[in-house]
Length: 517
Image (tube, rainbow, N blue to C red; front, side, top):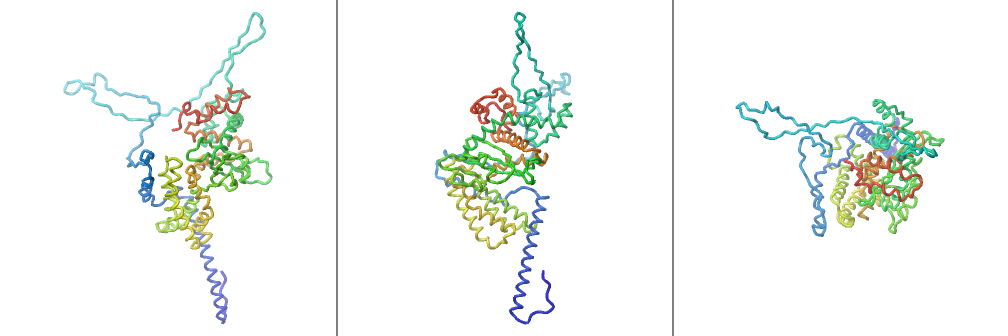
């Protein structure tokens, strides 16, 4: 800040200009101080606070949301109310009935079944209690013995009984062992070096180099199946996309920069097939995702892609993510001092309540048909969206451009056309959260294994993550599904038609594979 001069000018205009200059400097400093305070509060909350984005005053929205379906003029038989409220009872949940049970019965010895009065005791009931017992991983060796046969008469040669094709030829890795390792890393985020230690405790010497080599070979075996999923994915009318950073050490680039793991998910409310595909790319540019989505959305009405501007075209329409806009206001609330957050009439709180009403409507629309959801969105959601837009326009000039609340309002206004596009089709979801849920396991795992050594390893990781998350999206137990694939695919041999893989698609195996609990 400028220091005051020793003498003040005598002219009124010059003195007035000096005062205005100093006032402008003071305003800039106060605005900058407020920005630093917001950043400090946000950093403190990110480090020590809860990560939940729960809306303030959610309870006041329930009664409003319950009344939405009443206005739809249809027979009661056409709609099914799925919302119910139950008071939570204290106490622990009962153990799942799907877990195998061993009943241990405790009875008094025959000699003790006599009352003090001398009469015999009879059974008057039972008291039951449950206790969960765990059996550590059990490992066994399957010894394959191929009997050889020969003819003593001609002695032309020896014939051996055939052995089933294995996922990795000349390896002692079975389908179940490979499925176990894949699920441990790509679903439970257990790095290979930790699995090496676990196997060592079981008296099995498996180096991480061996485990890594197995993952690469399994990826090669499953690549045709991944390609088949890709063929089906690009036929979907609605997709969701997301990406996150990835560190690849030897990616061939002289200048070290971030690589990316992209994710694509069939994103409609009523998607024909639930497919989740990861893809490694060295960049975040739109052309990177265009490679996987070449020929995307071949339909007369065009396709919908949630989130990315780079692919927006006449045949691919961009849909914004309402959760991203809402998150900006949630960050603005967290950036406020603790005392200010308690003010229920603050701008951030007001905006969050408006978003909460939109999400309350979507919760009520769950389970309806595409046409019913479309009509209700036009009737109920559209007025709320117009109210949110009007509120943002009214408060645009009241907020500083660099403040957290100012950024939230400007982001919402700039993205408005894509954010509100979900009301144009009852099959489109309000946000991109489904894709973000599937990329979260990769983000969690990245904290443990930190990097990939080569692009080949990154591509293998993308493939194996894809199969695990596709199984999860179709409510199949990933271990059982991968074990089935690794057992059945080698039996097809080297030359087979892509259509032969359709029998192994997850939605065709719901009766053979155990569902995910």
